Length: 252
Image (cartoon, rainbow, N blue to C red):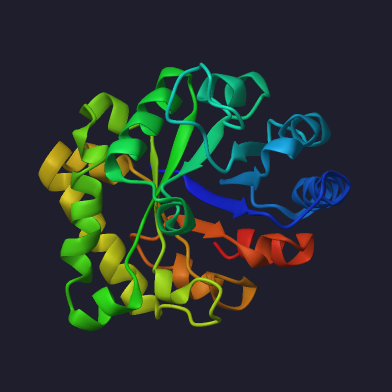
């Protein structure tokens, strides 16, 4: 049975002290209210990871970096390698987020290097894919998203692909307050799972967790997560308040 996962993505929104307090609040609420069958992940800035790992009960809560370098080591000032991320105690890394692609020019070639290094260092990539509004309106969104996967994680062996999590993010619904309808989310997730089946077989596809990452909140989590191919969420703004985040976690 594939995992149910709710992962927060704090992005560039908290300083260290704020992040530690947020982690404490999430940890306390998960301990008292969190669903036992849901994997909870906190995607924090690099500066927070070690402190957050020390703050939360890592048997209940995983910690993710929001990125890693495309090189193993060397003269890359300001970069943080996958090995460095792993050394902090983090278990996950978010890769391919639309903001990284759009603002920092991350290509499929770059992302292939990052995924490979993450896997080599025992990290679980939460790999993002998704389309902008013009792609959706053109009606080519299914093909577009599958192509993103074909250029990157579909290059992995089946054994390595089984180690990743997919996050579908309709870019047109991120930070806009617009959410894909339950049917739209299910349709895309089913499309992704069908593509995984075609590439790696049904067993791999049925074991792959596919998260929804577009303006998911406590008020719509239950409807979204009720879909058979939606296995959780990659949560942005709603993960910045512990009470909102736990409402999503309890949406299953």
